[in-house]
Image (cartoon, rainbow, N blue to C red; front, side):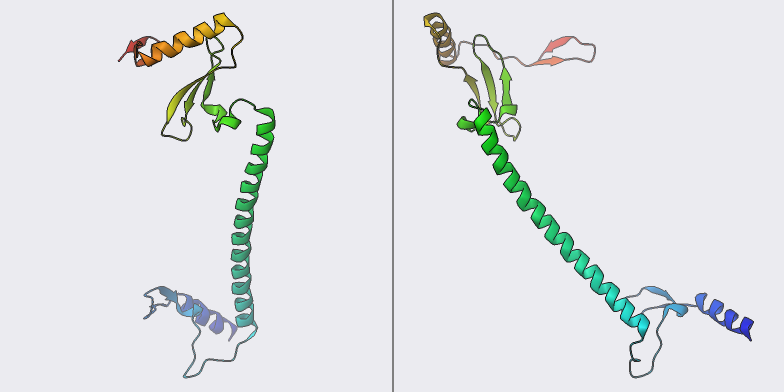
Length: 168
């Protein structure tokens, strides 16, 4: 008798059907068969509904966690900007990204490719400290005149794989 029951359940695992509602394939052994009325919920049904409830709550917790992370990220960025303003007297007060700046030091301190990191680039800024003397101011004025008169060359140079620089 015991082997007959095992054969019966083994046979049920080998019989397949197609759900008329969703067209999914299923095993006969996985079905819940009942006539006219649904059977009373047993311990397995209660366990399944509790598991669904736990998955639902986990999803809500994940959503809340993501929302809290986003809020913390925004708050952290604000706090970081406050700290950066204290230690960066050059770029932050002018709403410039320090990552866009390249240090030259002479004849000007910085060249800022404003917007380079965010794209598209807005403009190029030549940024220098307050004048130190007449000679230094003369160099700054000279640079201003060259730019105003467009008395400069524009070239695009590419470094090739062999290390040579090529004009385009």
